[in-house]
Image (cartoon, rainbow, N blue to C red; front, top):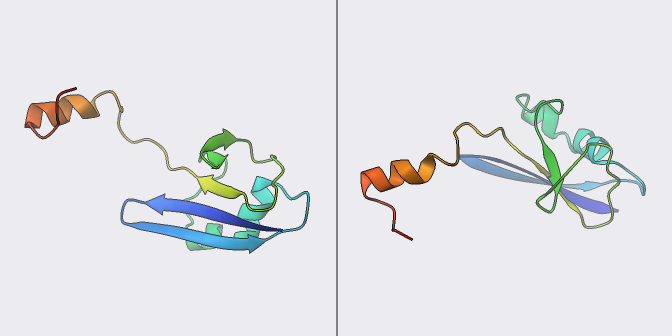
Length: 94
């Protein structure tokens, strides 16, 4: 079966198409894709993963056509971002 692996950095987004056997897990697909060699900063013990924007565990079984996403850690508190934008006058008021 064919699945996609997605990973995004602020300046670059990558997509890998991977053929995997039936019953393969998220972890197996990520390892098979070669993305861990291209992006050594990805640590599957720390980075969260998901299938079609829904968080899942590494042992989740994939189905044909799934999109596996590797998420980067959040580096700022999302609650503070609107306040900073409003202070700068760039954000529209709700």
